Amino acid sequence: MSTQDLQWLLVRKSNSFLVKQKGLGRVFSREPGNLASLHSYKHSGIVNDKAIGITPAEGRGVIVTTRKQKVSPRTVKGARTQTTIKGGARRVAGAVANIAAKNGYRADLRKDAVARATAIVNTQARKRPVPKVRAPRGANARKMQLAKAAAVQQE
Image 1 (cartoon, rainbow, N blue to C red):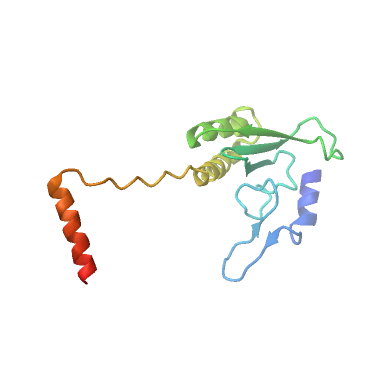
Image 2 (cartoon, one colour; image 1 turned 60 degrees about the vertical axis):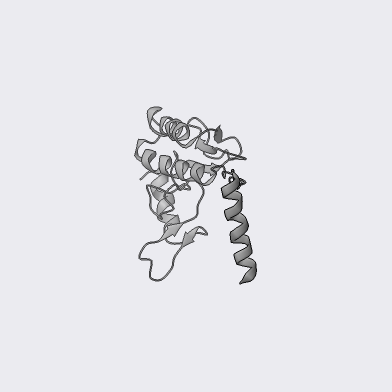
């Protein structure tokens, strides 16, 4: 039995990140590094040695957190690397897919990682300014506007 299996057996029934609610039918998790927010061995950010965390960055973009491969299990501070990816949804999705799968990290989490990163970037979209109301052009248009204003005042 590996250390990950043993850790999962110890953590799966009760930990501070569990979210249990009646009527949902599923158990969710708020742990860092859990992309799908589901309480399962596959998605657990606590137990897995190769967990991927995606959080929003300052301004636009996401921060992808991965665990370094050749670090002692007792090392906490220097065990993780953070990569900031800025840009639109397509650029971020491609970069996250490369980090998750192409480099041989966790190919099974590629879909969840891309979905989480794209959702974060889409919520950060810039709000477009409301277009200004143009003044009417032409004599007839100005007359119609004055007539509408007079009708509103009479009511």
